[in-house]
Amino acid sequence: MIDNSPLTEETVTVVGGGVGGLAAACTLADAGADVTVLERTDSLGGVTNRLELGEFTFDTGPSWYLMPGTFERFFDHFDRSVADYYELTRLDPQYRVFYKDGDRLDIEPDLDRIRAVFESYKAGAADALDDYLAEAERTYEVGMEQFVYEDRARFRDLLDPSILRAAPALTHLGSMQDYVAGYFDEPKLQQLLQYTLVFLGGSPHNTPSLYNLMTHVDFQLGVYYPEGGMYSLVEALSALGRELGVSYRTGAEVTGLDPVDGGLRVATTGASHVADSVVANANPAHVERDLLDADQHGRDPGYWEGQTYGPSALLLYLGVEGEVDPLAHHSLVFPTDWDAHFERIFEAPGWPEDPAYYLSVASQTDGAVAPDGHHAVVVLVPLAPGLDDGPERRAAFRDRILADLAENTGVDLRDRIVAEQSVCVSDFTDRYRTPGGTALGLAHTLDQTGPLRPSHHAPGVDGLYYAGAFTSPGVGLPMALISGEHAAEALARDAGRSRLDRLVPNL
Image (spheres, rainbow, N blue to C red):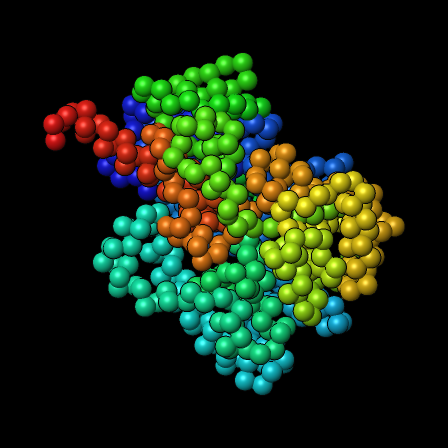
């Protein structure tokens, strides 16, 4: 957090009311800045939002509440607790996996039961899991303390002595596929240890094995559900911001940013103002292509075309009559060989023939999100960004997924859907201005990890900072929250240097 750098003379505009922007706003306001958040749509939250279809309520984006300590840590900075804003339920099972060969298993919030699942697939797998988890925990602890909670956005930051001491714990630079295969040769167990990579926008073949830490997050830290859904986090952050003096304007689209003497001119529809600094929670590709003039930033024109983006998705929001057992709150449906699906995302973009997908049924935990006798079901299929998702293509794929669901889980929704809406590739492009309609941001490939991700400082533009999934520490709600802190801290450091330069011009 910001220490000894009061911002009482600073005016800051936050562009975009997603989780990263809301976290930055709270952090800056707590340091004394005059903060206004501008959000283009009619509700805060960005991709973390809420959809109401009649009596059904859906989380539109993230639906896994992971790393609860990260959220507790954030609110503790302001002498608050998560419990001041919402209650958490630990899920049991954490999730259910359906394999398309008819196999099914539960991951429960008990390590002994998880060990038993592994041992049931291969003698000795439980002991191998112990070894794997010990390494994952070590990677997690070093990674969080040295690279996530600390902003290491520049290569010179890696020269810190504490980083050099920690380096032996972070030598996992090969692929996750090769790393996991060194512990387990059973494909289904490999999938259990790798599916979380989709949360990072990657595949087992392009994500470095240092992200073994995600298994520690999954198996040992638990999966939770906030009362009222994931949007409760957005409501908590905005409420905290108001308590700290943050102002919010929804329906306020930013149409341009122009560096001027003393700050940045922020243009919105029909108006403009000058802020000392701007934190853009809008993705930097959009900011640099659409809000800044081409000669105002220091990025090569082809930079964004050369990056590897996380998947887009087809999302089906379905209000369903009747029971949906055996679907759990979180369920995953995997083909026994999912390599072809990842190839259709990263190597040869196209609609998958045998897709892996995820289902959220929050109404299995929270009866308030669906009327009696009904369930709120979300189906998410990862897709390659940039696909042509015209109405006919989308409808045909929707029908195929519902048929696949019926065949492989025994749950046939097709004649029981009473409310429905879908979101696909082009919607992500239109709503969030993301390259190719990626739903996540930059993938966590080796060359897009740590200081190789875009910096919080916008290149070539004084006073402009980035927060969100396109910068460090990366993809996911906990990372977005931390990115907002880091952007605010970078702004405060620069403001302190600027103030010192004005006071002692010849220093």
